Image 1 (cartoon, rainbow over the protein chains, first blue to last red):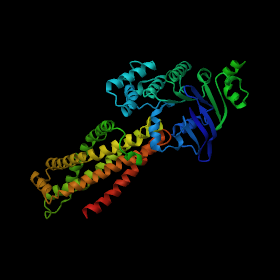
Image 2 (image 1 turned 180 degrees about the vertical axis):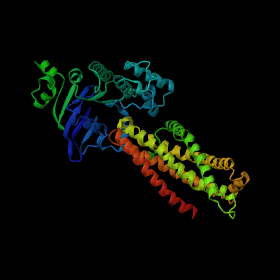
Image 3 (image 1 turned 90 degrees about the vertical axis):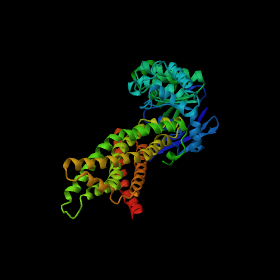
Image 4 (image 1 turned 60 degrees about the vertical axis):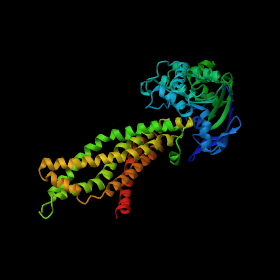
Length: 248
Length: 233
């Protein structure tokens, strides 16, 4: 389980996170939802240590991550996999080299073993035979799938996904959502997804935290989210015509 | 930036990166270095020859002046300034683009020390390969001077060669190499620093690149003065 306890973060005078406390369950797909600019990405970056919270603490299964030194965090992060909004694949490396990168850095496997693992991960994300392609030759959906394959190549305990559906068509977005959900269950990972995509919320949100203007406003799951009487959550959920019709 | 100078996470990965940087920073710069060196050597020889308008100064001075200006200043300093534009801006834009596209964050999340992984191989490679480039530059510049004298007919080969040998102090080569190593460190570390701390988008990558080139050039001139004072006086 991952716990955020009283997290606050400001950039200059702008307070982005205000005393946010929540937890993310092991083996589940946890969602952080909210409008653009609500503080979702900042919260996720605080969780992985890319930003240092001004106050509060982050705990991973009772290990206080926020109190670790930078060197300890670096070692601990080997348990992390992260899918960035733009994929963050290394431009100069092929798909195979991208996925092999963490294996090269942290394992003593032979080249054949590493290639086998790469092929397994690519197969898992339905991208067999894409080994030799470069990121510039991939579509948006393929980039996300390669990024997922790279994230899971070292069997992480924790998977973080920052807006995995941004820029994708609804069908591809659904494929990515289901893939993340399946992988989470398969490997028993703790997965946290930042999203404002309502399909993701309703499809895979086993635990949902709603952030509004830097505050945690609501927590629940995909079954409860449509029936909440929280005004801000309803304004967010039923912002589109489609979801309003769905509610009716 | 101190993180950049820690021991690499994995030796084999560092060596692979180093080989790549030898190619990217060194071998790929060889063409422009040799081209500029050949012409500048020729120009230095011709200008010296045209400015000797009294028979009291022997024509061997053409070889002597060309040699001194090439070894002491042109090859180590001017070529390093050219490498700031070619190599330095490349380093800043490469690392800066990685920063704004979250590739550096991806490295950090994987548990890799990004500054060390990206910058240390570049610094090490440049400090090894740049002196080699400068030695090539010196040789080609002096050959360029010879060809210019030969083609123009202003100075005989014998006079030019005699000038090259005249009062030659091997320490000047050591001085040129030491300057080059210091400049190589400045080029890669300053450019790496500006790339690593880039924030924003494409425009900011461009701005970082410009700042890196300007500041590295200033530091090179400053250190040129300091090293000259320390080593030659």
